[in-house]
Length: 467
Image (tube, rainbow, N blue to C red; front, side, top):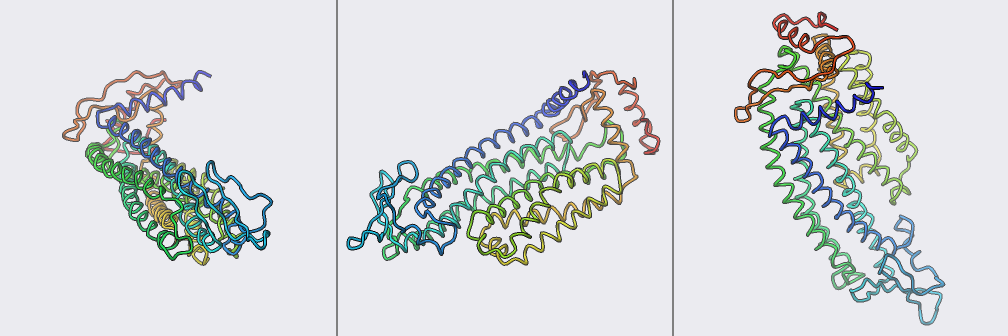
């Protein structure tokens, strides 16, 4: 019971020690934490405005998700005045000679004046709602989750002194900054499309039914772009400093040779790709499933059963697949690693077959965010396949034994890699401090393991590691 209670306490202390190891690690974590919540707040505001105006258009249409049923909004009603969304109201306008026939609706969005929407105008609203506002709402929600996922990867980079994790975080910030710039450009493009479809004189609507949407969205997107650009500069400096430190150090707390250090980097690269793949593949599956369930695509998809089957199998196997890669490399188990590589190859083949579907290809091209997530998931799948194969070819060269010793030191109360850094030169300085530790049940002192590896560094034999 004491061991069960003390394990999470040791983990929390380990995380705290790693984060506060130096000013750079502390600054890197605090920056990631603050930026995560700042971006999360901005994306939440964007989500709220997209959801609000999408809800208004959906309520006006009051029809299934297929454009062929747009006439349903003009079906006979027993009530002439109906509230839709908060202060938004629609009033049915009947034909004076035939009361059962509805000629259109009056839309009231205070404090804007009442506008009349005829039959053709409401049909055109299907495009901006289904193909713009609802897609933007899904993107905003996905980006909120990605900010917190990126924070977890940043913490893993500090915990494991992982160069691949730092590069993954930095690359993700570059992509986020590019996407923010694209979002500002796309908002202006969409405003022009809406103007040509509905707002200009001579169009079916000839009126701007939500004049505050695009100015409000730009008011959020421009600060988001500035924040991402600033964050990219800060993250580049902090990442470069950490990379200099991590590249200068070796396994000094266990004395492992350089080749084991290189193998461990491949392992960290696989881990970083797996963590990014969790978000990319999950986002792709969620966005595609939502498209199949809540858009007109569901009426056009001829192979919905196969689509949902692939989504279900991928969702079920995602966590076991990650566990296979993690334990297969850590334990240097060729059976687990072979199964991991086989499932990775199957995922590439099965998801490649999705492009045979014309509805998936159309959605892929029409919706850039889904396209980006799909391409990212394929890149990460290929990266896992290549890096996993490299790790498999290096089985038996000491990585599993080193990781086992590292786990033993952690169980004895030692925190990985505790030593002083010269932050300006990017190199470790001084001797390893003797930290407080808990007595192990085997009675093996940490100094014994440390001294063993330092004495055996030149004649490394993985099979002779004390257990």
